Image (cartoon, rainbow, N blue to C red; front, side, top):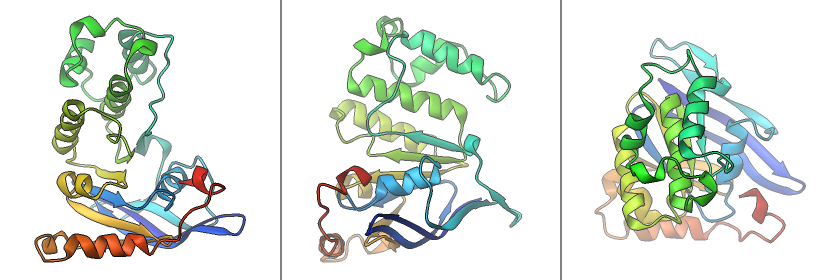
Length: 244
Protein backbone atom coordinates (compact mmCIF):
# COMPACT_ATOMS: atom_id res chain seq x y z
CA UNK A 1 0.00 0.00 0.00
CA UNK A 2 1.11 3.54 -0.73
CA UNK A 3 -0.03 7.00 0.23
CA UNK A 4 0.48 9.33 -2.71
CA UNK A 5 0.53 13.13 -2.79
CA UNK A 6 0.37 14.78 -6.20
CA UNK A 7 0.97 18.48 -6.93
CA UNK A 8 -0.43 19.70 -3.62
CA UNK A 9 -0.66 23.49 -3.26
CA UNK A 10 -1.59 25.80 -0.42
CA UNK A 11 -1.34 29.58 -0.17
CA UNK A 12 -2.04 32.07 2.60
CA UNK A 13 -2.72 35.39 0.86
CA UNK A 14 0.51 36.01 -1.09
CA UNK A 15 2.56 33.41 0.78
CA UNK A 16 2.89 30.10 -1.10
CA UNK A 17 3.41 27.46 1.62
CA UNK A 18 3.05 24.34 -0.53
CA UNK A 19 3.86 24.44 -4.22
CA UNK A 20 3.54 21.36 -6.40
CA UNK A 21 4.34 19.06 -3.44
CA UNK A 22 4.44 15.44 -4.61
CA UNK A 23 5.62 12.22 -2.95
CA UNK A 24 4.79 8.49 -2.65
CA UNK A 25 5.02 6.97 0.84
CA UNK A 26 5.24 3.18 1.27
CA UNK A 27 3.54 1.29 4.10
CA UNK A 28 5.68 -0.34 6.76
CA UNK A 29 8.03 2.64 7.00
CA UNK A 30 8.43 5.65 9.26
CA UNK A 31 9.09 8.79 7.23
CA UNK A 32 10.76 11.76 8.86
CA UNK A 33 9.28 14.97 7.48
CA UNK A 34 12.15 17.37 8.10
CA UNK A 35 11.82 21.10 7.71
CA UNK A 36 12.50 24.38 9.45
CA UNK A 37 9.95 25.99 11.73
CA UNK A 38 7.44 27.63 9.42
CA UNK A 39 8.29 25.44 6.42
CA UNK A 40 4.70 24.17 6.14
CA UNK A 41 4.81 20.78 7.87
CA UNK A 42 1.67 21.39 9.93
CA UNK A 43 -0.05 22.93 6.91
CA UNK A 44 0.69 19.76 4.93
CA UNK A 45 -0.76 17.58 7.71
CA UNK A 46 -3.84 19.79 8.06
CA UNK A 47 -4.49 19.54 4.32
CA UNK A 48 -4.18 15.74 4.44
CA UNK A 49 -6.49 15.59 7.48
CA UNK A 50 -8.87 18.00 5.71
CA UNK A 51 -8.77 20.46 8.57
CA UNK A 52 -7.99 23.06 5.90
CA UNK A 53 -8.63 23.03 2.17
CA UNK A 54 -5.75 22.79 -0.24
CA UNK A 55 -5.64 25.10 -3.26
CA UNK A 56 -4.70 22.41 -5.74
CA UNK A 57 -3.47 18.87 -6.16
CA UNK A 58 -4.66 15.59 -4.70
CA UNK A 59 -3.76 12.72 -2.38
CA UNK A 60 -4.99 9.14 -2.24
CA UNK A 61 -4.18 5.56 -1.24
CA UNK A 62 -2.97 2.89 -3.64
CA UNK A 63 -3.63 -0.73 -2.65
CA UNK A 64 -1.32 -3.67 -3.21
CA UNK A 65 -3.45 -4.49 -6.27
CA UNK A 66 -2.72 -1.05 -7.74
CA UNK A 67 -6.27 0.20 -7.17
CA UNK A 68 -6.55 3.84 -6.15
CA UNK A 69 -9.04 5.00 -3.51
CA UNK A 70 -9.82 8.25 -1.76
CA UNK A 71 -8.43 8.80 1.72
CA UNK A 72 -11.25 8.54 4.29
CA UNK A 73 -11.40 10.13 7.75
CA UNK A 74 -11.08 6.72 9.42
CA UNK A 75 -7.85 6.08 7.52
CA UNK A 76 -6.03 8.91 9.30
CA UNK A 77 -4.58 9.09 12.80
CA UNK A 78 -3.25 12.51 13.77
CA UNK A 79 -1.15 13.21 16.87
CA UNK A 80 -0.76 16.94 17.48
CA UNK A 81 2.29 18.57 19.03
CA UNK A 82 0.03 19.97 21.76
CA UNK A 83 -2.07 17.05 23.08
CA UNK A 84 -5.83 17.45 22.91
CA UNK A 85 -7.59 15.25 25.48
CA UNK A 86 -10.82 15.74 27.48
CA UNK A 87 -9.30 17.00 30.72
CA UNK A 88 -12.56 16.59 32.70
CA UNK A 89 -12.31 12.78 32.35
CA UNK A 90 -9.96 10.35 34.00
CA UNK A 91 -7.64 8.39 31.73
CA UNK A 92 -9.74 5.26 32.30
CA UNK A 93 -12.99 7.07 31.53
CA UNK A 94 -11.52 8.55 28.35
CA UNK A 95 -10.20 5.21 27.12
CA UNK A 96 -13.50 3.46 27.95
CA UNK A 97 -15.45 6.17 26.09
CA UNK A 98 -13.15 5.90 23.07
CA UNK A 99 -13.61 2.13 22.87
CA UNK A 100 -17.39 2.42 23.25
CA UNK A 101 -17.89 4.99 20.47
CA UNK A 102 -15.65 2.93 18.17
CA UNK A 103 -17.27 -0.40 19.00
CA UNK A 104 -17.25 -2.63 15.94
CA UNK A 105 -14.41 -0.69 14.31
CA UNK A 106 -11.59 -1.89 16.56
CA UNK A 107 -10.15 -5.31 15.84
CA UNK A 108 -9.67 -7.56 18.88
CA UNK A 109 -10.43 -5.03 21.62
CA UNK A 110 -8.53 -5.62 24.85
CA UNK A 111 -9.24 -4.88 28.53
CA UNK A 112 -8.40 -1.30 29.46
CA UNK A 113 -5.45 -2.25 31.64
CA UNK A 114 -3.82 -4.11 28.74
CA UNK A 115 -3.72 -0.83 26.81
CA UNK A 116 -2.38 1.08 29.80
CA UNK A 117 0.33 -1.54 30.28
CA UNK A 118 1.30 -1.20 26.62
CA UNK A 119 1.94 2.52 27.14
CA UNK A 120 3.70 2.08 30.49
CA UNK A 121 1.05 4.12 32.28
CA UNK A 122 1.31 3.23 35.97
CA UNK A 123 -1.75 1.79 37.78
CA UNK A 124 -1.89 4.76 40.14
CA UNK A 125 -2.20 7.16 37.17
CA UNK A 126 -5.03 5.40 35.38
CA UNK A 127 -7.82 6.93 37.43
CA UNK A 128 -6.38 10.43 37.58
CA UNK A 129 -8.09 13.29 35.78
CA UNK A 130 -6.38 14.06 32.50
CA UNK A 131 -6.09 17.70 33.55
CA UNK A 132 -3.59 16.52 36.17
CA UNK A 133 -1.48 14.67 33.58
CA UNK A 134 1.83 16.11 32.44
CA UNK A 135 2.34 17.08 28.80
CA UNK A 136 4.13 13.80 28.19
CA UNK A 137 1.38 11.72 29.81
CA UNK A 138 -1.30 13.50 27.76
CA UNK A 139 0.77 12.78 24.68
CA UNK A 140 0.85 9.10 25.64
CA UNK A 141 -2.95 9.03 25.84
CA UNK A 142 -3.27 10.80 22.49
CA UNK A 143 -0.84 8.31 20.97
CA UNK A 144 -2.64 5.36 22.58
CA UNK A 145 -6.10 6.03 21.14
CA UNK A 146 -4.63 6.58 17.69
CA UNK A 147 -2.74 3.29 17.82
CA UNK A 148 -5.85 1.44 19.03
CA UNK A 149 -7.70 2.78 15.98
CA UNK A 150 -4.98 1.29 13.72
CA UNK A 151 -5.02 4.04 11.07
CA UNK A 152 -3.72 3.37 7.59
CA UNK A 153 -1.95 6.73 7.66
CA UNK A 154 -0.42 7.95 10.92
CA UNK A 155 0.57 11.63 11.10
CA UNK A 156 2.68 12.81 14.03
CA UNK A 157 3.35 16.53 14.30
CA UNK A 158 6.42 17.20 16.47
CA UNK A 159 5.13 14.79 19.17
CA UNK A 160 8.44 14.16 20.97
CA UNK A 161 9.97 17.64 21.04
CA UNK A 162 8.97 18.56 24.60
CA UNK A 163 9.06 15.09 26.20
CA UNK A 164 11.63 13.95 28.70
CA UNK A 165 14.20 11.47 27.44
CA UNK A 166 12.56 8.39 29.02
CA UNK A 167 9.09 9.04 27.56
CA UNK A 168 10.60 10.00 24.19
CA UNK A 169 12.49 6.70 24.01
CA UNK A 170 9.32 4.79 24.96
CA UNK A 171 7.41 6.53 22.18
CA UNK A 172 10.12 5.81 19.61
CA UNK A 173 10.17 2.12 20.53
CA UNK A 174 6.38 1.96 20.27
CA UNK A 175 6.35 3.62 16.85
CA UNK A 176 8.96 1.21 15.53
CA UNK A 177 6.96 -1.73 16.86
CA UNK A 178 3.67 -0.49 15.36
CA UNK A 179 4.85 0.63 11.92
CA UNK A 180 3.97 -2.54 9.98
CA UNK A 181 1.00 -2.23 7.64
CA UNK A 182 0.71 1.54 7.78
CA UNK A 183 2.36 4.71 6.53
CA UNK A 184 3.82 6.73 9.40
CA UNK A 185 4.90 10.33 8.75
CA UNK A 186 6.76 11.96 11.62
CA UNK A 187 7.17 15.72 11.41
CA UNK A 188 10.17 17.32 13.11
CA UNK A 189 12.70 20.14 12.76
CA UNK A 190 15.31 18.07 14.66
CA UNK A 191 17.59 16.31 12.18
CA UNK A 192 19.20 13.92 14.67
CA UNK A 193 15.79 12.72 15.84
CA UNK A 194 14.67 12.09 12.26
CA UNK A 195 17.86 10.19 11.44
CA UNK A 196 17.55 8.07 14.59
CA UNK A 197 13.87 7.12 14.35
CA UNK A 198 12.92 7.16 10.69
CA UNK A 199 13.46 4.72 7.82
CA UNK A 200 13.27 7.48 5.21
CA UNK A 201 13.88 11.22 5.34
CA UNK A 202 11.76 13.68 3.35
CA UNK A 203 12.66 17.36 3.21
CA UNK A 204 10.00 20.04 2.98
CA UNK A 205 11.71 23.16 1.69
CA UNK A 206 10.31 25.99 -0.43
CA UNK A 207 6.97 24.15 -0.46
CA UNK A 208 8.39 21.08 -2.22
CA UNK A 209 8.90 17.53 -0.91
CA UNK A 210 12.15 15.74 -1.72
CA UNK A 211 13.72 12.47 -0.60
CA UNK A 212 17.06 12.25 1.22
CA UNK A 213 18.99 9.04 0.59
CA UNK A 214 19.94 7.65 4.02
CA UNK A 215 22.39 5.32 2.28
CA UNK A 216 24.70 8.36 2.21
CA UNK A 217 24.41 8.88 5.96
CA UNK A 218 28.08 8.16 6.59
CA UNK A 219 29.24 10.28 3.68
CA UNK A 220 31.35 13.23 4.72
CA UNK A 221 29.29 16.38 4.74
CA UNK A 222 25.92 14.52 4.64
CA UNK A 223 24.34 16.52 7.46
CA UNK A 224 25.88 19.73 6.17
CA UNK A 225 24.12 19.22 2.84
CA UNK A 226 20.76 18.81 4.59
CA UNK A 227 21.38 21.90 6.72
CA UNK A 228 22.33 23.89 3.64
CA UNK A 229 19.10 22.85 1.91
CA UNK A 230 17.05 23.87 4.94
CA UNK A 231 18.90 27.14 5.40
CA UNK A 232 17.92 28.12 1.88
CA UNK A 233 14.33 28.29 3.13
CA UNK A 234 13.07 31.85 3.35
CA UNK A 235 12.64 32.98 6.96
CA UNK A 236 9.01 33.12 8.06
CA UNK A 237 7.56 36.31 9.47
CA UNK A 238 5.20 36.50 12.41
CA UNK A 239 2.21 36.47 10.10
CA UNK A 240 3.10 33.04 8.74
CA UNK A 241 4.18 31.55 12.07
CA UNK A 242 0.70 30.20 12.69
CA UNK A 243 0.73 28.30 9.40
CA UNK A 244 3.62 26.02 10.31
